[in-house]
Image (cartoon, rainbow, N blue to C red):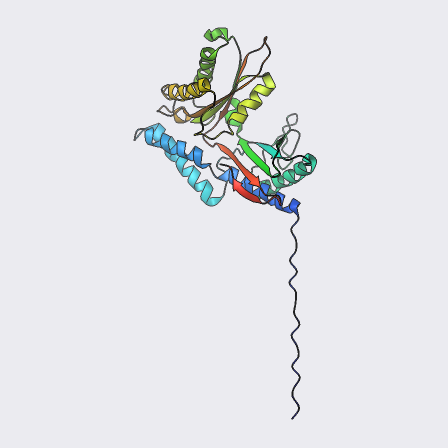
Length: 313
């Protein structure tokens, strides 16, 4: 009896489509935007919870802090923006030598457009002359992307979403500031910082955090003040005098009675971070950048294939 021939099964090789580094980078930036917009960093949330415990029951301050806490939880669970004002988009890119800034900017802008379409960002970049809002957060000066070369082969990308309300209560003082009898010294710096807090009166969605720069010119002073907001809330200034001033500003501000949203209470500031830049003898600026309670900043370290290796905050 003849044996039946058994047909051999053909081996089908699975073809794995290789994902390009540009696609991986796009997805990494998109995820960075999503997390920054929808999740408060741990160090900031820790300070907010401490502030909540300080406020007395059955007060407007306690009510405001309870709403803030609920808002944070809801935004994270639903992966929706913490605030309807998703802010000016500010990237800090720390990259190795031989890095193409133009290529990164192009990929980054695509990720911003995608994030806007998905609702992680609101479409709120407006033409300053016409008032029209016809783009997906892309336009002159938006997003802001600042490049810094470092010696490592990998790349770090930090993102800050800076709301317009808190930007409105930023301030800059040319010292000496005679209205307060504030001179060109740390005592004078203290006076003008506290003046800026007093003038804000809860506007800018307090309790907030201050980034301060002593020195520089008008432009670099404001930029360096914002850079201070990239520091962790629980870090300590390496300059002893500034560490002392940072602590004093927070403690003094929280005794002013302004409180959350200006409703009164024990928490006006969550933190204060102060840096310095060299200046010209003729100029002495103190620049103050205010960040609202919705302190949206995050960062990632990227592997050489552009995938996320770790979160920085």
